[in-house]
Image (cartoon, rainbow over all chains, first blue to last red; front, top):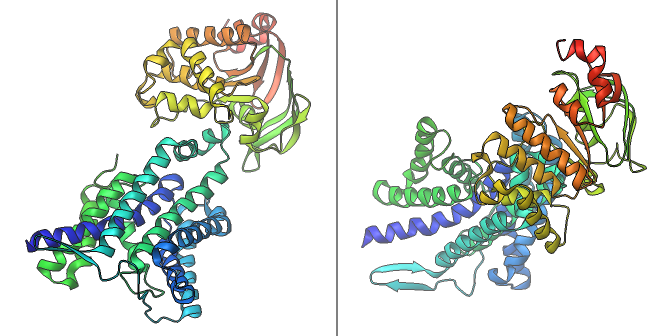
Length: 285
Length: 235
């Protein structure tokens, strides 16, 4: 029973990781850029939820569209101010630019809101749990996982089915040829950054009731998302989804059987191994 | 319809096209021929807006287009079949065609165009759910042409369609282009290394050598000229 409990915990955490990673892999797949500020965008969404809760008594679930909207907007602003200038430059430029951006957002948050841990005290879900046989499932965790899976599904459908989604696919394969079809690829880039922002916005909101809110809150998620994207095959949405679950499971099982101090070490170890033996990722082409 | 005047263009401030001028009239099929590296592709890329000229002007239906971004030029009625085909390999044949009609908002019109293309290229109908990259070179070339026609172009730019195709397929594609030109009234500007084939079907042609136009005339005149006979046909 304990084993099942741990597995379930891993899957629940992993689903949220997946959503964060989907946001990252979208941008990579389209423009070959790893956005190191991705986790920090998530932190912004957590603060949005926190302030809406503290100042206006908004429940995190009420805040969801607002915080996701804010991170979507943030994604567009980041694209227009930073990414647009480095997208055609050699790869290292974009890497340094987003890394700098990450430092900036993190420190700016610290300057504005202090490095202290804050908590979103009450939500309609907090403290509630479901008991099935001997397995305990926290309702906030369950909703966070289900919400993340639903969001991943919506993003995947959007990319596959809609006209804008197809324009994203086309631009990812060749920017020039997409332009020849009449696609405004600048706009496609901006839309994709907005989608990426929505992913972290939703993930951050769903997590803000579970974890403390502080300027470094997104850092580990950003890093894990990078690992997951690499495992799943760069640019592959469903690859990122499965790899996210895998990392969640690794973390939960490793943490339980080896001790919590090893849980991230195991995740990164898997990353190193996969990079060594299957550099295109587990689900890469 | 299209007037290119004293065009100079290149890459990273190194010009490859010098002082090139030519015109395309409505309904014509024009071939620009020349050997590899003469700058043919560069000319087409500049017309469709992927490259910006260093100097000179390009006018389409009386409107300057040389400063417009590529995605706006498509809307004016210029579609481009790129060199090496460049279909969207990971997308289905149908999605490739739908991308071609990206600028058309009316879904009924898109549906009608899709049916029209399937009629013109029955092979594509058979393979509509297949990923484009799994098709043969000739089929991909047909797809690239059909995709461009989905935009309902007034002017079709065709870049080196013979590249990597077997001779029988080249003839077939040329036949198709002729048909599109005559039956659908689409004006065509093609650039081609296969000098003889390209000039045979063209109303008029231009000879491009290292970035300059060195001769022009009707397809027949050019084929019979000493320049072409010596330099390209080995006679």
